[in-house]
Image (cartoon, rainbow, N blue to C red; front, side, top):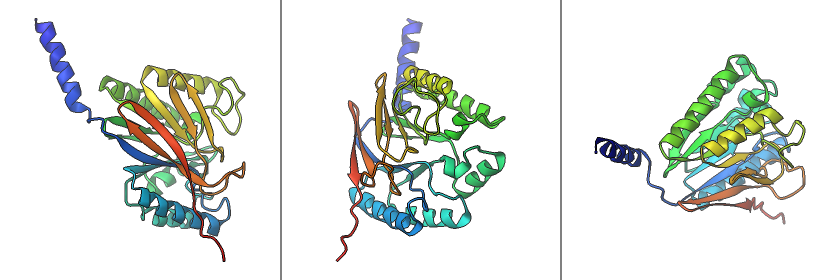
Length: 266
């Protein structure tokens, strides 16, 4: 009898801890990367994206890394000024252009001081969102990578124990064409990607959102959506610039592309 009461109490605590899963939407921006497609062009395109997103009025926006092309005070100031016009919360993930292809204590410190935390988590309407620094998966940085990996595994386990389904927000995709492909500039090391996918499967990760490839790449692994979005700076496959809109409910997680609408020239 006591055991039964304890189980009921545990279920009550979990239900109180977890937010109600009401439908919501959010936007996935990728590689705003001011200066990659031409500085003035990228500033203009990001401003157009901000205007369109405000009209959509999603619950929040996530940006999947490479906020700027060259990490300096000037470009970050421009990025923050434009993003401040969004009328909803914005959650940034760092990319290789933000913390370096080979991150250092100095580059991480600069990002953290200028933009904010490079990995963290937040909740929204019964879902958990874990923002990651994929450069610490790509490169093993002494102390930092180990600390990050421990935090990531503990955070995933905590969210599963509390009954949350999870979105992961990062920069580097795990892979592009196939799970077994060789490591390259566009993916994560094979051993690390398999380790991460195992964690995804064990901890109810519904989607992993990334950028970096400058083209849309959509895969699915064990019911986890792996979605790399188009950019607002420059796409390598010459497809339209834009962002993805995610619609989430208790029984459905869908996303669609929305292109930037540039003013027509007379």
